[in-house]
Length: 248
Image (cartoon, rainbow, N blue to C red; front, side, top):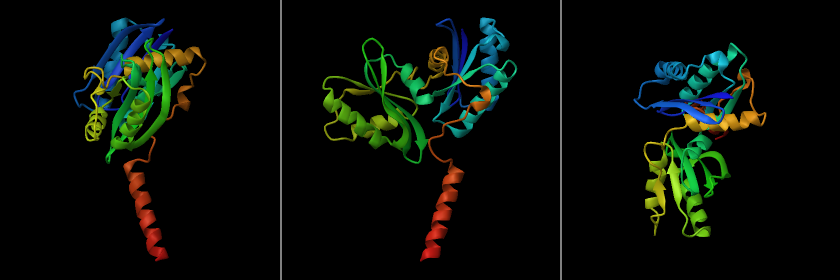
């Protein structure tokens, strides 16, 4: 099975290619260029490097959110375009799940993506020594302080075990942790070079889910934003204020 994983959910864009359970290629770019400029080039370079044509790909896996609204749409649009020619099945992958898969550490892993407005997109997973991953929290958007509250409760129940923070919002959670009274040193950041890389993990998750029959037609792919976009939030706030004025 040939799987191409694509991630454009945050500032770092990435592409990975797997074949029969092995990673053939991975690249990522965190230069700040827009994904609309770079993602197609990265994907084309990846397929050329491994000498695989788009029609030979069995599954496309793409991070579906949470993340940058624009970034998610760019990634999904590219995957839909590539999959259309051969009706290639696709797997939408939680960005937070992919970030956790990339972390090689046992214990609690808390992914956190900067959601702006003082919040992070986050979840929680526990990884055993043999690499088995168990989801403890669904993907959500909340304050960094709330995310570390869960970590603190977990630490209280698992003394001596460590917590690893991943994602481009990990530093926000780490700062919130350090502000806690009696904050210990068992909460730390994942290595910087893997903290925001998700494409290879997305390909691996996509391969697993496709083998379980969980792939979808490209037309059914939908981004999972986890909250309203800024324009929708502002409209809702205006409507709420107008309704309040009418009832006064």
